[in-house]
Length: 196
Image (cartoon, rainbow, N blue to C red):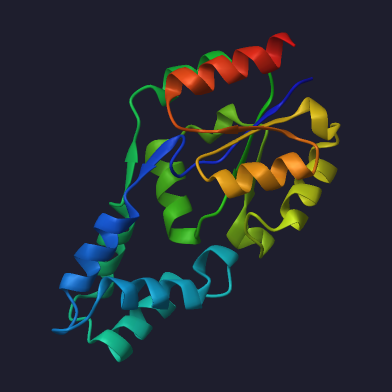
């Protein structure tokens, strides 16, 4: 078995974080900045499962005077994610050739939307999510955990992520790594991995 481990946001799903931050910031009091919004998001460690979007809503109201509703915030939050038209067929065909896994830095609200609207999770053998593991890439413990769970030698696995630092960390644990930039380059890397 030569499994492939996919990141989701920025690879299998389009993620427009900056547009989301801009939209939310426009609903805050005058003088609120993009950087202040990002700072709040970062401090809450949403992807590490320590806080929720409800906590984010409270912080935005208290610190930046957010005037929208909780539902409006959720709307902006989930609409930062979009389907990629090639993914469904690509994953379906690839699943006939090897075993597929997901390793994603995400949060509960994003993941619920992804599973309901954007990805057929039945195509994947197992899903590893940062907000359930309470750790995010590039923490090396993430890769140790995944390798232990799937019980496959690291060098037999191909890890694909759109963040180069995550790919470098995966390689340091012995995994094959591909930095996602285009579908064509990723397809070539996958074919090389499976034919090697």
